[in-house]
Amino acid sequence: MVHFVTTTSTTSPATVAYRDIFAVREFRVLFALRVILVGGDMVRMLALSVLVYQRTGSSLLAALAYTAEMFPYVIGGALLLSHTDRLPPRRLLVGVYLVQSGTSAVLATGVLPVGGTLAVMFALGLLMPLASASTWAMLSEILPGDGGYVLGRSVFTMTAGGAQIAGQACGGLLIAAVGPSNTLWLSCGTAGCAALLARIGLATRPPRVQGERDGGAARETWRVNRALLRDPVVRGSLFAMWLPAALATGAEGVVIPYAASLGKPEQAGFVLAGIAAGMLLGNLVVGRFVPTGPRERIGLLLALLNGLPLVLFALRPGIAVACVLGLAGAAGLSYELSIQQRFVDAVPEDRRGQAFGLLTTGTMTLQSGAMAGAGAIAEGLSPGVTMALFGAASACAALALSRHLR
Image (tube, rainbow, N blue to C red; front, side):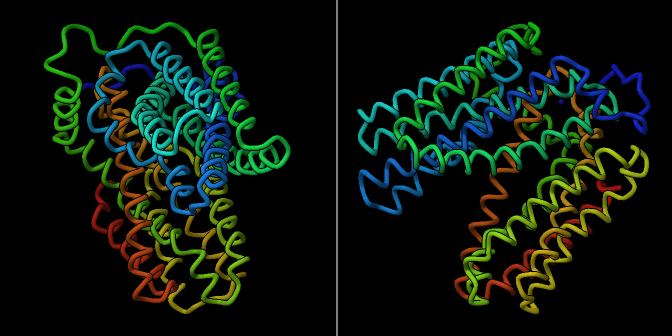
């Protein structure tokens, strides 16, 4: 969010445990919201994609329906993020969740043409950076200090992966059982429950920024983003969290073509599962068992681990070895935990929401761009070589940003 966070945890970072953070009532509420909404998003996206495909028979339109909510993320992040600190956090979250619920209800009725459906999802995607940024900012306020915030962040990261898998599985079962339209009605209900839970479970907080706005929302968003990026600690932390991870994630975009190049496209899921397991393992070990000091000192090593195993894909390893390499590389994504507290401390408290929004917007934009770029490169080079190039690029980015990783 140059103003430092003055509230500190009374628990030593080395001794913070899961029971400590789950003892905080508002953390439990945010955790429940995370599970409900990530899982609900997967269900809604899958049901909408199936519904559009049933109506049009177009794979392209089905894919657009699945990703329509993601495309405008960067636009919302660029133009609307100042609202994150200008609105009371609870009111903002409740409002976005109600919009999600209403959107699912409108889509479930089937009254919109396909173009209208995509437009509604695009509009919803503009609001999602605000909810995400507000959630991360509240997490840093609810769990202040070195140990609590970092452990809470790692729990959220692990939870998101599990909720995505569960949401996709449950979505498939629900669509098979009751059809995509009725599944969207259930998605409407989960978002409504999230709004109610946020309303009764989160404390009332004033806006982080008081007083008159200097210009419109877009102008203020750009002004604050520029101010954040002028701070060398904030800027270095952002680029360190963005670039190595985005480049390594780009390789994930060609896992399916890689498995197909081995003649086993149906086994790509095993490699993707290995990547998910690596993220879970890395966040669990580094977030829970590595104290603050050592965690910050091994940031560069973890960032290198994120990319270097991918270089071995140039040798075209089999599926079993590919799973191990994917797991090892994804475990290195936990390097971000070594930077996050430094990032929080360097940001003014009254701009914390927008700072987290800038972080998330940059992450989503760069990762999706890297995956698209990897797919394009793999049209000319083999998938294994493409994955190796992105792994090497990730390691080079980590070395270039080493000053901010230790």
